[in-house]
Length: 452
Image (cartoon, rainbow, N blue to C red; front, side):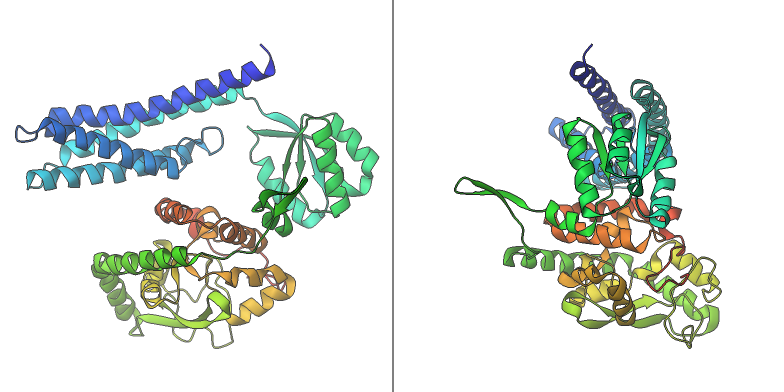
């Protein structure tokens, strides 16, 4: 079996597993619905509509949460993504059926159905994961290093993916082009971890292309910008059209309308929870419920950001200081609010006012922006769009993700902006709300070189 046929066969096997996961989840739902919930007053078309709506909701959520990225995400995250999509889809189905029957239907059968779906899905994921790594064993890889301090951090992440990559050889940019090329010839996969000199990067890319090597590289900021270029042609000359981010008038109007409707609806729906949070903050130490802080949004414009107060009063008498893990200034109530992300809810007022958007880079403080720009001049490009309550870096990074990596994620969002991408990030935000790693304290070095 040649390489092309083998690759197609492997993809077909995994595609069948993905189909089986969807069919199992939807099939169990339809079966449970017919056994426990089908009512004589519902027409055939009603049953059809219920099934189609459930399929669309479940598949959209499960796909957005990465439930079909078998072999890429860890098994526990696959099961978590699948289960979260099921819970939301089942709740939607329960609500839909209750509205159609004009009464609250029994909850017990739906809970039993959800448990059966999760159990069946977990077993399928265990089997799919085992099959994936059986037919796709870890690839031997060469790791090319450039900057020891930064590369070590990236290297640790690759080493944690031992089922996908098996680093069997290392070389360094300082070894020279000939030695690095010789090392690349001996391995099927090349990992270029650091940025290095442009000439060296170009040599590695060209050599991998010439020898049909797989190359996995960590991009620098300039490569992120060029990645959004459009292919074009000037007479008989091939060219790339690169332009800075600029939303169209229609996009700005639609995005603002979504912000207004979304924040207003969320404020109404979450008002009981927000009132409870405010009451707990007040009862704890008698201090103010809200905390106001100057942040910066689109175009460098400062605004007053609203949050529930999570620290003791006068927590920054010695000036601005980033929060860290086990920060003694955080109150017991505040720790719970941070863990559940409830402290961010008052920012819905900022969105309604127009200071922020639902999706965008995290708003930063003016003094920190000045500090960041001294080490990373590209940081100012984040100010091309409004700050957001959620965003690419918030969803796909962690709270303790290195600052430079968060910046790259924000720039990727800006360069590839679309309303569909915004919708995807909004859906994906639900997934990270309940993941402990997404709310961990800062452990990185800040641009000033101090521990945050």
